[in-house]
Image (cartoon, rainbow, N blue to C red; front, side):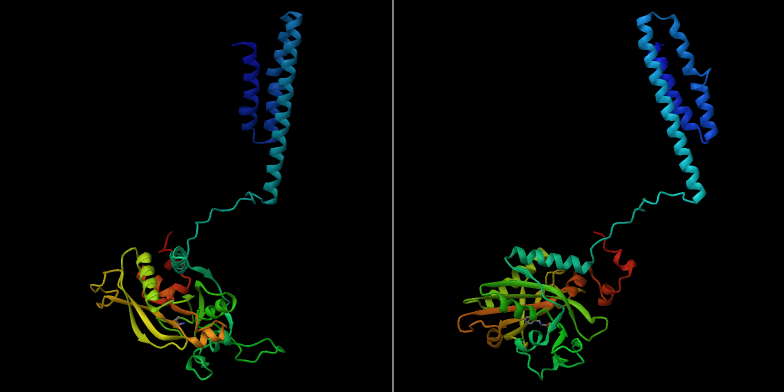
Length: 350
Ligand code: PHE
């Protein structure tokens, strides 16, 4: 073994083996004596200097001194660490307080996932995604949508009214929790000029609560306004949408219906995406699944929003996002979606 190897080996043994193994200050001191004491292993090396030629002696002496200084530093560092550990033990601090326990990653709620998927499909079809407030003017939620003061939907039994702040100039009845996403139609037509193509997705509120109704649920609204827009465009759009969403061609059908803000109005169904229309348990053998309401924007709504009904036509549709999520995941009770039970939510990993 060369002198260099001896020196490096001794330093390594002292720092990596002896000092590391020392668990008390006394142990560490004993190591120090063993290597750096008067008869220590590193000290002994200095005694061999006498046998060297003078020029070698200087260089070698310097190396040995550097190794001793490094050993001294390592000893002090080990003592400091042992003292800190002892103090922490005394304080009862055994753990690294900066350590954050690993938490299992969360996943998106099935409704959020469905909502995002809907947004993606409509955005790819050229629709802007817009938003509206949950606390809404009764005027936008009802009046401007041609839902008159005597309409049953305005009943306390159906609608959550919001008390205006004390001392404000608003009366009870002016503010509601929106009962549908259709007020976003009004907000959009008041602030944009045609051509308009938007979808609005979000939470709505009704005084309803059973296995298929929740007082808080989610809707998507679509609105298209331009010159010469027709019911055929509406149907083609819905057809394109359901086919893109379920990744297979699916028919859409209209049934005549009434909503004050559209004329003509319809409810629309899609061919069952699970059996392709043959009939299965999801569509209860009918081959069709009810989706929502739709129709041509009523001229009274255009007038309330300052859009010329002689020049423009438009269509709108609305349907429930939660029902869509239930369909996709075969969930039979709507309330499961909103109870926040981890055992339920865990069943929807990414
Ligand atoms: N807002 C209606 C509802 O909540 C749905 C709808 C939207 C109907 C647009 C026609 C046009 O039931």
